[in-house]
Length: 226
Image (cartoon, rainbow, N blue to C red; front, side, top):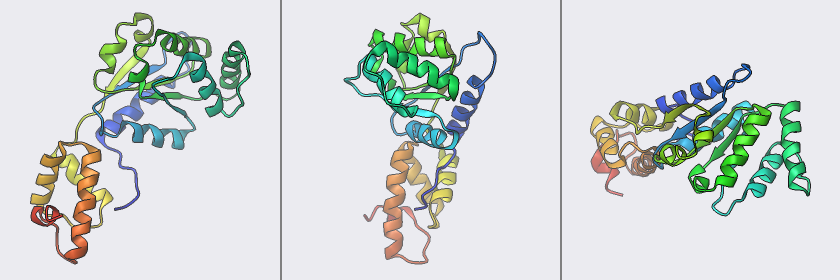
């Protein structure tokens, strides 16, 4: 399997959404929410975008508090956090003034019930006026709607979708050097449910079969022989 990043339609929508919040208009909100079931490539898209565009990616943890989160933001912005939390917040403001960057928070479901963290992120957005992206699972938007002061700052909500049969075929074509028969693509589409993580697992299985059947297109029987 080729070690490449595949830009699906959902990824394209995600990138376009981030471009929309990277504007220079004063007084206009700059937050984006991306949702979707696990396994659809949300985190991979965020990692790729951050690497290509110098954005800051924060993977949130279940035990995180507001101060902990602020310190992680400072670290990702390239500085050592101050001792006092008020000074840490000021660091973020100063660092963003010096070199403005998009901040992406992944796994936001973990703090969807933590008002302190949500209000802290809203403060970062309002004071720094920097682009902020939330990435969560499929019900993240419903959870965050309860916090109206935060939720109204989302310019757009992007939903990552499962790949259809055409999308699965294109994904396989880009990442695998093995030739797949049409019936194999059909079965991968069905068995994976259109989830990228499952598609990758099945491609690995197919490529293992290909080593046993050199120079032969991979059909569904070969894939499921293990």
